[in-house]
Length: 517
Image (cartoon, rainbow, N blue to C red; front, side, top):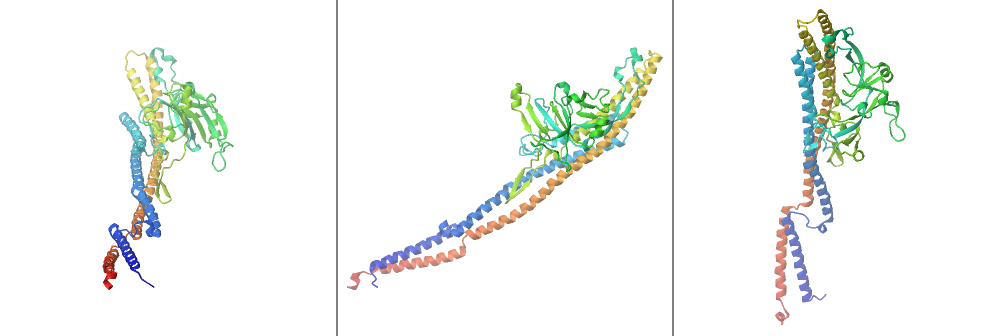
């Protein structure tokens, strides 16, 4: 084969360029520290690098953002629940004191004030928030759990279910002495023959007091939903509950709690007390429905500060009373459905965790209503004591006739009887509150334990992600990073080869045809 000068020159340039390309690749690897500079260098390494980088990016999102955010949310929730538990414990302590001790009037009033303040503080804890998001309101993180101030611009139609175990059997004092109606000038007409007595009351207690009654032209219905053998409610083809009995406002008697017959319904009657939010069942009605659940639909507006907002607890419709046009108000009404609203954070690959506790799992209307019962019982005792003092003061008048003194003595006897009975009712209210507060404590403690258990799981996941983050970083390094020692050795060797190729080329191109003539 004939070798020409052009062939030698071309081979020389090819070899020099090839060595230069190899040297340049080693220089890039040495300068960047990466095994490849472009996907075409090694497609398998490139694909593996993309996958590892994606996985590492997701790990960083979980480990550095999602989990810290979830932990902060849960820590704030747990803190609020622990404070709530401590407050309920204080309420329980006051109930023990009230049930067992002989209290002075000042002690009773002090306890009433403290109980009301503690009740308010419990519900204020329900408005705990994290980064501007309310913790206990499910998906409605922009809506507080309780009203921060009095609210008179929102009207609710509420549907509340009262289960059979929530029907209360208690005692009330009836036929009390209406001393305020007593007139010394007309004392003969004042009845002192009828004595206060204790009656058994079957009560459904709504979650709110001062609900709008039928006298306010508001709708009010009491329904008995049909239950299946498995305890679920029977539904029609459209998914609505089927009812075995239904009572409208025309089937009930609307009264106030101060009415003498409020707590004395006839056996077949139902009394609705709008001011206290109570439904009093006659004995026959109770016997008929004692094992039934009750669905009550009523209307409520004019909320007090720290009252729980209905949309977090019940099926309800909210209307804005600031809208004057009724058609527009109805059009803009918002319907809420009571449902589980778990806020789930993705904390690992295909792994989610609910980080929230809903208000109804820890904060119930029953706590506030129980405290209200105690305060009312204390108020009743104090009122009777004040009336007794008024009678004693009136008897000191020297101008009284013997008949008037005798009548006042009769009244005093009636009031003392009433005081003994109402003092017993007050102690019963305290004793009942002990059980109620224990249940509230248990509920909050269960919620605290629930969030604590999830927090521990979150920490375990965080620890596992930390290990995975390290492992994926190592894998990525092994896949992408160049071995600097080998790179330096290869670079120096290639540099020697490249210089040798330049040197040999210089010698080749020096010879011409004239050198051989």
